[in-house]
Each structure stands twice: as C-alpha cells, then as structure tokens.
Length: 264
Image (cartoon, rainbow, N blue to C red; front, side, top):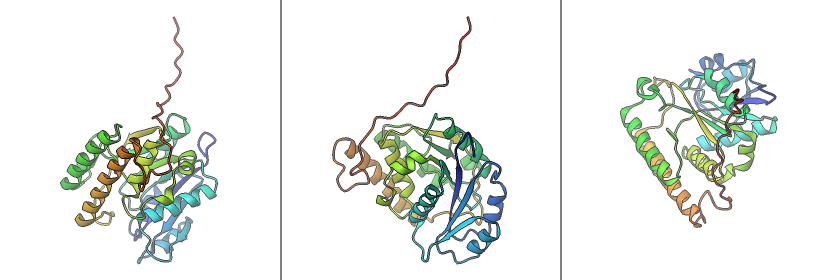
C-alpha cells in the first residue's frame, strides 16, 4: 500500500527461471500488496519456482505472446483491486528497486503513467544495450515524438507503471498479442490525453536476459511506425481499422504543479 493505493507488481514471464529469484529478492514487499506472475507456457522451471517463492501465478496453456501475457496480467491485477500496477520483466534487466519511486509518482496524482527510461542519463549503452538497438531506439523515438506531438526520451522500455484509471480506459484487447502491444498501448494512452512521466532507469544486458532477435526487432520497428502513422491519421479523423478506432481523443493533460506557499 502506498498513500492509500493498493500496489500490484505484474511479471509477464517466459523462461525466466534463471533470473526470477534475483528479481523477486529486490521487490520491496513491504509496500507491494500483490505480486502476480503470468507464465506464457515456459519450458523451464519458471512456474514451479514462482509458486515456491509464494508469487500469485497464472499459467497459459500455450504460448500466446508477450502482449497477450500482459493482458492477463492487467486483468488479474484489476480483479484483485489494484490501484497502481507496475509491469516488471522478471529477467532482471530492470531494477525492481525503482518500484517505490515509480509508484510514488503515480500516487502523488501528478502522473497517470510512469516509464522507466533507459535513455535518460547514461544507462542504456553503459548497461550493455547493443549499439544497433540503441540507434534504432533513438530513430524510432524521434519519429514518434514528431507524429504523436509528444516528448519522451523513449517509447520502448519494458518497465511501466499505470493507474487503475488508465488500465480501465484503454481497450487492451484491441491491441496486438505480440511485442508491439507496449507501443500500441502507450500511443493510445497519449491519444487519450493521460499524463506520462519518466524516471531514469539503469538496465542490464547479459546472457539470460530476454531480448528479441534482429528479425523480430525489424518486425517490431515496422509495427511501431505503423502505429505512429495511424495515430496521426486518427488525429485527422481517419481512425477506422486502427487501434484508435472508437477512442475519443483528448488533449494532453498537463502534469499538476505542486503548490508552493511564498512568504514575503
């Protein structure tokens, strides 16, 4: 619980047995009310280990994809009464130690979504991000900032925190079951005018950390560009057949400024 908000951490997992325990050990369980792991038909001991650690577990009977995994995560978290949901990869690529500050930004009421950015600061390349992924990240983000008329340091982090209001508002089931799900969801969030904040997040690239291959990275990049183009067309009234169909666009809400009492 944080400032009266029920806090849930969701772990979309696939073959995470080698890193799950390290990830779990750094989750601040004194403030986290629920930890939910959704196993996407792993072929290793992920599900068994999660149960041994006392994590709430749900198992897909077949591999449904990264996006489908998250849909199950969020539905389960909402069903259990979560007010704030933080999506954390169980591959130990992102540090769980930032759960508290990310949740605090949401609980403060200043933001509706908080992203753990690998680009703010020097975390990405220093943490071992392959150069081609870094360059692709910067090019895609530059293009998205133009087409979405927004300003983020990156759109592609796997470390994300949401308020209940956001998860109830966005039509998650309309989005892809694959890796582009994250980007479609974030684009819808911006389309709906929710306030998005970022926090600098160090990252680790190592053997055992999950990462999509070059071929799937290309497919992801194409999907990102398609979504950004559809966003711009939807702003012009041409949303039919896109993930923005049926959504009412709202102007971006400004982050609330703290009240400062001046003494003269």
